[in-house]
Length: 300
Image (cartoon, rainbow, N blue to C red; front, top):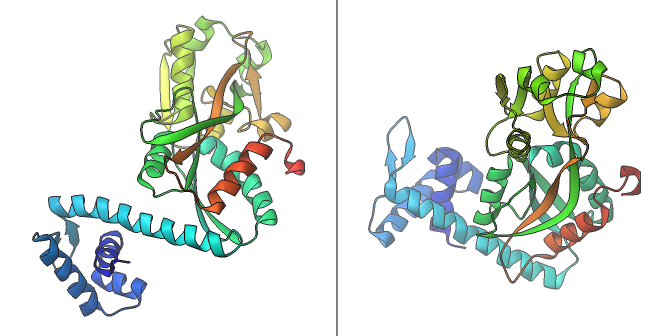
C-alpha cells in the first residue's frame, strides 16, 4: 500500500496530523514526512495548514478523491486474494436508503450473520442519491435503494423486490374515518414529505404529478421516523412505504387513506459498482437479498 497516500487521506479525514498519527500508529513527524514526500512527488502543495486547522486546497481535493479510489482498489484486491485462500470473511460495507435501511435491513443482516458469522457488515443509512454516489466511488460495497428511476451510468442496478406506498394519517384524522380522499381533499391537507434526493420523495412527487395534486402546505423532514411522529400528532398526511408504517397500523396509531384504486408501487434495487470482480462477501450478500427479501422475517 502507498503509505504516503494513506497518511494524506487519513489526515484529511481526521482533520488533524495528531489524530491521523494515532489512528495509523505512527509518529506525527512520520505523518508529516509522508505528506511532504507526496507533495514532492506530485510537485504541488496539497494542504493549507495553520495552528487551528488543516484544509484541502484545490489540488488537494483532486488528489484526495483519486487517492481514496486507489486505496479502495487496493483493499478490494486484498479481499479478493483472501477469498481465494479462505472462506468468506472480513468487512462488508452496506449502504441503504432510509426505508429499506431502517425497516428491513436490520432483520436481513441479522439473518445473514447467522449464516456467515465471519463476515462483518457495517451499515450506512442515507438517501438514495447519496448511496448511489458512494457505491459508484467504491466507498460502499453494495447499496439497496428505492425509487422509480435509478441512473445506471457508473453502477449496476438490479431490481429485486416491490414496495407498496400508502397514504397515511393519524387515526383521529377526519380523512381516516372517511377512508377515501378526493384530489380536493388532498390539496387542502398539509403534506409531510422527505427531502429531494430520497426515493420516498420521488414517489411523492410522482403521485402529485400523476393525480394533479397541488398541496396547499408542504413540510420537509430528513427522516421517516420524524414524519411518522408528525403525522401521528395530527400535523398532516404523508405517503410512506407500507413497511415503514406496519407497526403503527397494528396499534392503530396511523391509518391508510385510499385515493386511487390501483396500488402505488416502486422497486427496491441492489446497486453494485461495475466490475469484473466482486469479493465473495458481496456475492453472498447479494444472493441472500435475492433469495430472502420480503419473505416473512421468521423465515429468514
